[in-house]
Amino acid sequence: MLNQVLWKGKSRWQTVGASIGIFIGLFLLLFALQVYLDVQILTKGVKDDNFLVINKVFEKNYGKSLEFSQEEFKEISQQPFFNQVDAFESNEYKVSLSSQEMGFRTLLFFQSLPQEFLGVDTTLFQWKPGDRIPIVLSSDYLALYNFGFAPSQGLPKFSASTISLVDFKITVMGNGKQESIDGYVCGFTPNVNSILVPKSFMKYSNQKYGEAREIKLPTQLIASTDNPYSVALEEFLEEKGYEISRGGLIGGELKTTLFMLVFLLVAIGVTIVGLAMLVFILNFQVLIAQASNDIQLLIQLGYKDKQITKTLATNLLQLFGLVVLLVFALLIPIKYVISSLITEQGYHLSYSLHPLVWIVGLLFCTLFVWLNLSSIRKNVQNLA
Image (tube, rainbow, N blue to C red; front, side):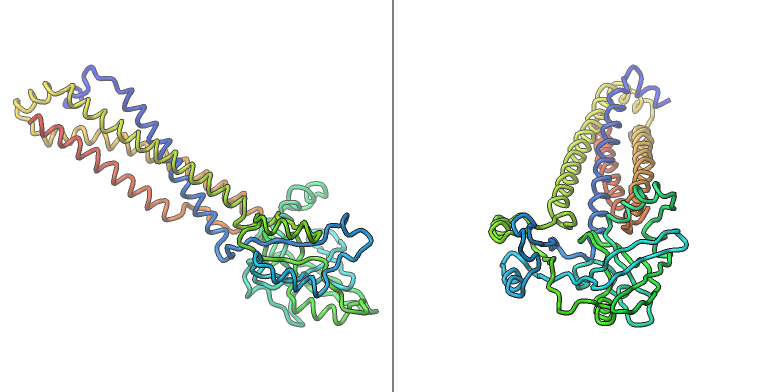
């Protein structure tokens, strides 16, 4: 009865519009927060440094050696815009990889780098004679295999977790010797586009099977830097005839752009939520003002102001509860789909919402309900 009296002749479209605003704003706010947290998780354990692969420009060094001399390596290492510089070490023998489970055989190459450049679990990336060879692949390679090579050859697709279960047979040949060793993929790195093995295996295999008569100088270097787009760095590369690959930057322009987009989503979400909350509060204030005569009559008939407040609060909570339910009903499956796609690319990401998202959602709900109930209670009491 109280509902009928309070809403008699009143339009609910303003309340519906405010509910839609709350839905959009709260969804954008929580979605942006989840994206931010996912990026933090994906880059956890990786330095804030950006990793650059350096090599000589072929056109500018035509007819010259593309290797970096010790003097050039030292000069690059001493540049103030680089935090750390190291060289790629490559195999000096022939190597092939085969798999009975996947039904293919291919020639390939190996490189090795210090573990701090890879961003993988160092306990897995260890090798000694008699062990299986752990292999770290570029994160891009898994996507190329799943969406390019596998469909064309009728091969199965793999996620980062399932491909680690596949056994590979690695055959190394050189110096008149040959050996077959079991290997497996132990992880993926976004920092470099290469096929990487532990330095201990590279040293062992090059000494035993290497065909080089003298120590080979590196043709590629890897460097970490705080700012891969600094003017000083660009000028140095241009002067020396070097070029860099920024494809595997973590914390670089792509990450910065992503965080800017997340910040924009948060700003839009907060703005919409704030305006929608204001509309909600004003809507119930207008409702109470328009029904002031009816409310005063109800109080004179013996109704308590708490009963009227409770009726309005129930309407508010039912409507707001439905909005929150719809927000999470949309957010949870979207998070699951995004996590599935990212996991297929070689990353590890939880399929459930981050606990902080639930906490922020709860805090927002508490604030929203408290503000609206306080406003309703105050306006009804003023009429009592």
